[in-house]
Image (cartoon, rainbow, N blue to C red; front, top):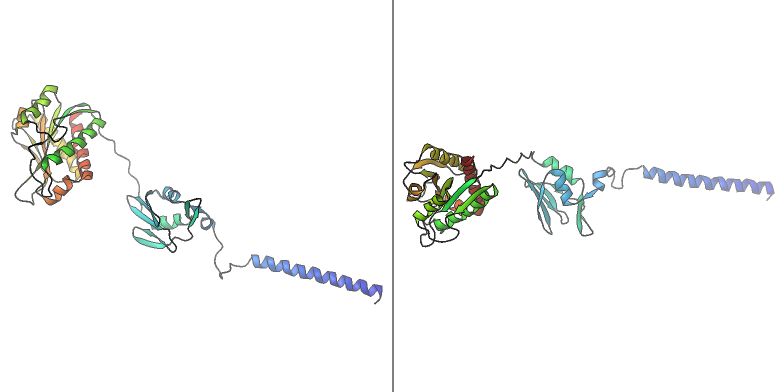
Length: 317
């Protein structure tokens, strides 16, 4: 082979190599521009790539995390319940309706990480909720005697669910005292525990301290078990100012969800003997199964005590 011919061959080889490399690079670039391997899937977006924990989801959606278990998270606000099941193939439920599978769940440094896209998916299925401002709690100053009716050897009326009236009266009285104390009212109880106190002594507690209001708590009973509702009593000779106090408490108690039987007059001994304003409250009928159940429920007792406290504070203003 001649030297000139060899030089031409080397040039052809170099050109061929450059062409091959160029085609390989072009193939890589073209492949990088093609859709994903699954045939037309969209490229991942930011929320698909971002992971969040359950508290970040709750904060973003105005929810509270109320339950965390090995299988699911529960988040709530007054209008929505969200459950996120974190096992493989687990679904997300918004108000008991599935919105599909959770997706990729990972545990990183002991923290369960969820797809960021859940936030938008859950939000679109939630019911609208706007938190209302917390109402101002009524406060007052004054001296109040709380009388938990019956006690000790005197059980009061029996409730249809097996409780004694004396126990119900004391439980509500203790809750009422705590609420009034927190609102600035000075409270004295006629009994602190399951003890018997004479009726005259109950009234005299109020008389000795010059109480601004005496409130006696009781639970009613009737042979007709369908009778229900709360009733307030003042003495026959009670002045109009005492009646207005009773009406203020009656109106406030409506917030507890029971029906009112009004303000009535009756010469109960504790009302007649008390020298200042005195009101006796029959909080409901424990001969009625529904009201007996409510009056022995701690959560309802709190609600009832709050309502009575609102009324008392209105009286003392």
